Amino acid sequence: MFKDSIELKNYLTGIVEFNGDVNILDPVKLREKAIDELVYNAVFNPDENLKMEIRNLIRKIARKLGIVPSSIQPFYEAMGRGEVGGFTVPAVNIRGLTYDVARAYVRAVKKHNVGAFIFEIAKSEIGYTFQRPSEYTACVLSACIKEGYQGPVFIQGDHVQVSAKKYKEDPEKEINSLKELVKEEIESDFYNIDIDSSTLVDLSKPTLDEQQRPNYEVAVEMTEYIRKLQPQGIEISVGGEIGEVGGKNSTPEELRAYMQGYLKLLAERGNYKGISKISVQTGTTHGGIPLPDGTIAQVKIDFETLRVLSEVARKEYGLSGAVQHGASTLPEELFDKFPQVGTAEIHLATEFQNMIYSMLPDDFKREVYEFLKKEFKDEWKTGDTEEQFIYKTRKKGFGPFKKEFWDLPQSLKEEIGVALEKKFSLLVQKLNVVNTYDLVCKYVK
Image 1 (cartoon, rainbow, N blue to C red):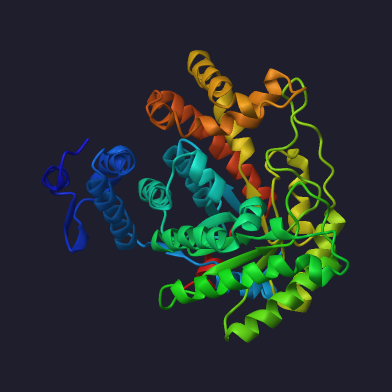
Image 2 (cartoon, rainbow, N blue to C red):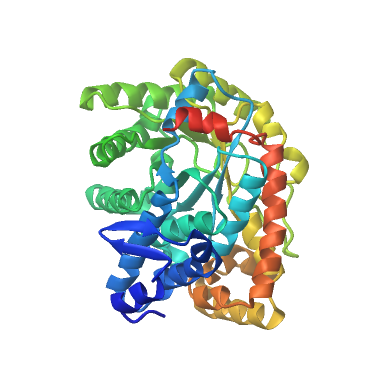
């Protein structure tokens, strides 16, 4: 662990020179060893100022190497115009072993010449995985440096979600907390942000406009805030949401009610660019539904709803299409269908977490599970078996055991990386984003 800036500079002598600007003197040594040390310190160094200095250094090194945090907006606009299509963009949430998982993802996209791929982390995940946006960006960019990737990198703030309970108690306080997070994300090179105010939809209201109004009003306020904060020359890709994942399936009428209200209000607030995509509900639940033995119940996805909503989003509003959440635990044979029905983007998380846990040493896994049973016993629902409880809560083991995960034997981490790379490779093929690198670079400058 570096104790100060002098030790950091000494370590990088002959590899990276930095004094305001950054020069890469030895890219081979940087990739072979130095980047591993840098990212470890960017996550675990006890000196907060030094930690931030290292995170910023990683961002500068990445840019020097042609690794550029970008907005997918121009590419999604091309999808909305019908100039490109026939694929579904994967957006992967990384909860633990972030550097190693990101490396596996980068290897898979490089192998298949993929340009349309997203790294993301949700507001809730930032909380329970103990990863602030600047740390997440440092891990993602370090993975790109390590694996020799060059080109646009899309980092996304997933589910910047309004708490309906907190909003009811104090709307201004809740929205200000979201704005603080969005500001932190933008400052950390998150140029793709999904606003989720679908939690405010009130189905008891008599008209669709009244049901969706609190949703689109907050979405407009957040869009305006993002547009005023975004760096010059970057149009951040903003996502909206009409159906809360796990709730009832969305309809074209709800989509139109949301979009009409949103666009009208946005025009009144100023000449701001609107959302680029819309998240909908089609029958999935985040993480899947665990059965008493810990296995996952089969989910019936309404692909026809997805097709119709994507078509309405593109043809009537110029959006890239509909976004599918909570899908990573679906059977592999279903993933071909997402591009077939015009799904713009798909969010994937839990299956990668499940794969990691399945490969952990038994004693370490037992330690994590015992901790969860003690610390989160209040979340153990009546009637749930231990397997169901563990399945639902083990995502919360990544934060408290972050260092223990990171310090797992290198051979095991490599084994996990190989398994994940294989999974990512399969997914990018099924989602048909193979050979999209040049296409993305054509639109994303």
